[in-house]
Image (tube, rainbow, N blue to C red; front, side, top):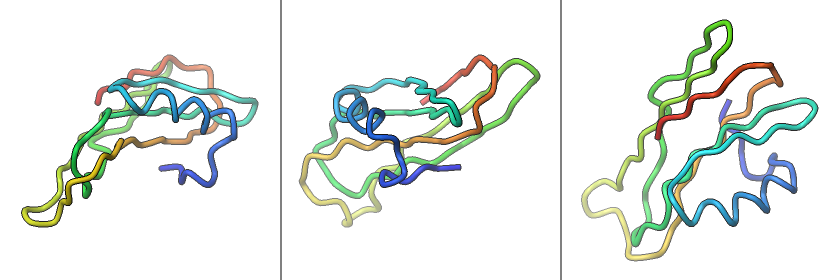
Length: 100
C-alpha cells in the first residue's frame, strides 16, 4: 500500500527529508510495519509522479520496482521537486529488493 506522507512515522519523515535529495532506496522498519522508500533526487520541474511497476513476494524476498513518470507535455512547471514513494507493508522477516 502506498503510504501518504501524513501517515509516516515521525522518524521516517525526518529520514526522508535527508534521503530524498539524492536518488536511492532504503527500508525503514518499526514494530508493526516496514516501509520501502524510493527517492528520485532533485528535479527541476513539477508534475512528476512515481508508479509502481511490480511488487511481489517469494518466501524470503519482497520485490518492488518503480518508475518515475515525467509531467505530460505542457503540464510541468519550473520548480524544484524531490519525487519519492513509500510503500508500507506489514512487518515480516524478508529480504527487500527495490529497483527504481
